[in-house]
Structures are given as structure tokens and as C-alpha cells.
Length: 411
Image (cartoon, rainbow, N blue to C red; front, side):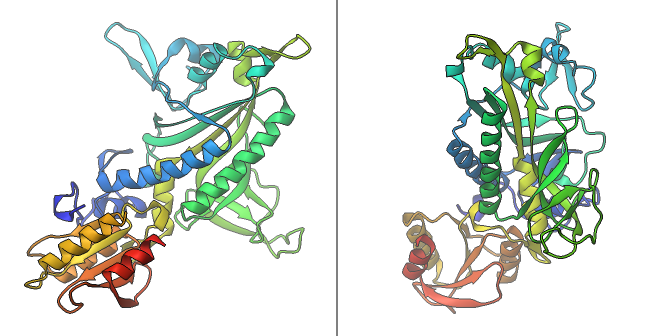
């Protein structure tokens, strides 16, 4: 991709209405632009990151045996009344048509999916069933803040499990925990599995919390990895010695990037979702819910991976593999074009800064701000057929041939 043709460019200043680090860096880097408070437009660079994260999520969800669907965002009011949440769900957007028909603008999808599943599940042979989607959600947050971490419109993956019994549910619940750990590891963040309140659905839930000083949540956890609780339900205090000898428990700010919990028969009962068991008796389907914020995770990655110059994207979620910077020395135009073509032919996704009449310093500053993991520089100083390689998180540079570069990037 030629940077000169890319829709969305870097900017130096950001509105004071964007106090969070993720919003500032994503806006300055040309990834997002705010529409209104709590609502963001994702430009090509930002969409590339969202797609990278989404594909990681899809891969891990598919491994658990889940099938992907896409459900309606405009939802039936009658179903929300059936569950009693039309008036009790505080963040629900309610939309009225010209025909005076009211709809819910989907913040979650139990009211859509459960009646749909009821049309296809009738026997124990139809279970277990696991369905997920990646879709835009809408929540009327009283105070949208922290950039893409707490928005009124956001991209989310929600998965629902439908099981015959609690034992079957517990096995799948553990499988999803492992899948989430893989997702966060591949996305370049360390997420702590944290016990939290289950709200109206159960006594407990589990959150996945990313430690950062700019987080909205707060947890008490063991650095050894065997214990973590959200402070809102914590039964212990910071400084208590870990029961397994890992030292004192710590308190930290954090960002919730995932939340999983049992639904039991809460929605099965509301919609009459049952199955005929092997004994011929009708039984309620046991359900679970597993959420993961795609756009929220993008913001969390930025909050964790940055420095004074800009974003430092982990390789797996970076918008491009390399940032190719051409310094405008006379006679080097063909060198840059040849290098770009070789990289592309090798399957390497490159952002080529081909802008004219832009200084080397400005191009380097933009490369640091955008945060692609590898910067390759072409100039007369480097020489024909050579590039200067620099990792975004390092000050060291080294000269390599373009062929060696392509081999290293694809190995």
C-alpha cells in the first residue's frame, strides 16, 4: 500500500476531549476518527487491526467447535419484554419506526439467539451447540470515556453455549478459558483470569483483565498467577500472603477485555428452550455466555504497547508487516519500487511511504507514531538492493539485502 494513497493520515494535535492514551494515539496515527462522544469511525489502518484481532478470535472459537453466525442488531421488543429486560436494561437503546413500532438496538443477543435456537433444538442429539458472532453492539453508556475502551458503539465477539447438563457446560467453559488465553497471548497482551460478580445470572463470572495504570477496573492478584479477584467482590486485601507461597498479593488498575459467565436456564426458561432427553423427559437447556471486546482489545493493546513516540503494535495484530520508508535521494526511486515489488511478491504486507517533498525526519516520526513492527529504509546511503532494518521497539539498525529481508520476514 502506498502511503500517499492511504485514506487517513497522521496528525499532530488531538482534541482535549480525548484524554485517554488509546484515543490520542489511534487518532494521531490515522486509525480512528471520532464521530460523536463514544462513537468512532475506523479508517483503513484501524480496520486492518480490527480484522487481525477478529481473525485470531475466529480461529480460536472455531477450534472449540463453535459456529459463526450474524444476528440482527434491530431486535424484537416482545422478546425483551418476555425476559423482563425491556425496562430493566439501563443501557438499552430503544428505536421507534415511522409505524410506531419499537425495537431494541442490540447491546447483547440472548433475546435474538435463544428463540432462534428453539426452532432447531428439540432432542439431546442436537446438543451441545456453540454459536458465536462478531458484530457491532450498542449501549447507551451514561458516560462514554476512555476512547475505544468504553464506547456507545463497539465491535464485540459474543459466544453462547447450549448444553445438556452442568457437567457438559463446565467442560466447555474450561475450553473457552483456554481459547481466550490463546487469543490474548497471540494479540500481544497478558490477560489475568479474574473472579468477579455474576450479576443477575449467577454467583460468579470470570473476567480477563489486562494490567495497566490507565485501566478503569482494579484487581487484587497474585503475581504467581494462581489468584485474582475484582476489588468490587474481593474477599482479601492487598499485601496478604499468597496461600501457595508466591509472596504478597498486589493491587493494580486493569482493563477488562473479556467476560464469561453461566446463564444456566435464565433464558431457556423465558423462551421455553428444552430438549427431550434419552429418558424421554423434557429438560431445560443449560447456557453460557462468553464476551470479548474486539475494539476494546485494540484499545487495550495501545494502552500497553506504546512509548513517547507512538504505538508499538505486536506483530500479529499490526496493520502491516513492514513500514517501507523511501528517502528522496535522486536516482533511488527505482530502488524503492523494486524493493516494494519484491516484498509484495514474497507475501509481505508493506506500507510504502512514497510521499514526495516530505523530510526524512517527518517520515521517521510518522513511522514511529503508526507503530508497525519493522521499519525498512531505502536511501542512497544504504545503497541499491539494500535496506536499513529497524525494529520499532529497538534503537539498533542493520543493513541487509532486500532478498535477506524478505527471507527473514517470511521465515
